[in-house]
Length: 362
Image (cartoon, rainbow, N blue to C red; front, top):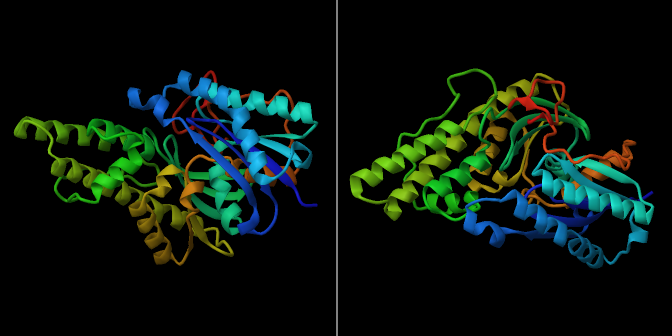
């Protein structure tokens, strides 16, 4: 039986819907619609949760209609509805979950709640049919983890960030240097004209064993270097801004490369039949980071998989695919499906960032 899944995504500031059908990798995505909210948040220097939630609630029905129309299919041709149920900004997650519940109930369709991070982690299977188990670096605005992916709901965390995720550090660095949001593309573009060796920025946690990461101190080092330059020169020149961006990006690249080498060594202890390193998440769009991870993979004899850039950032095709894999393995949700601001992939380990009344953060 060929399954057709409608996927919905609303965990941050992108409202997305996609229609996906099981088949060959290049033919699976029938439609993928992503509507960003950049113009709504530009004046605030970052995503405002209340504004994002309202925009999701206003747009998600239209985005879904557009995805169905582009796929040339009606609800009668859909076998299940998959929706990101967390982690993310709770207002946006709630908008998506409530809409998905209403749609599934009204159309008499099965509902599948998907962990947004699982969507990223399973993207290499959507694009390349990557065999389990593989090593995944999930590197995005809110998360950074090394995971051994053994199944659609079976993840082992080898390490992760204990504070800021790289994407968050990119955004904060852009804000420090007066660059537009989102910070990742802005910093990468500025770094092309910069000298990465001008500033001696730290490589956090490389002096400690293990695969955990930290980027908060690096961001603070950029702030202090900027302040010193402003005090010495009376301002921040374009050349200095570019050098700071290049130095920051090089530091993130070096940390990720060394931690990836350690994660690869742990993963290879399992002697996987077809060893592979995959990378996904918004920061995976950074060309310098992709290049160094490809080098690490080649050094260790691993295949390297990096999905197309459009599937690295938030999208609903990855949610539809994760929903498809879960559906095939027997997973179903009901009307008690809850929106979750926090939802670790590896619940067997202690959370990296602590926990509260709403559960573990990561």
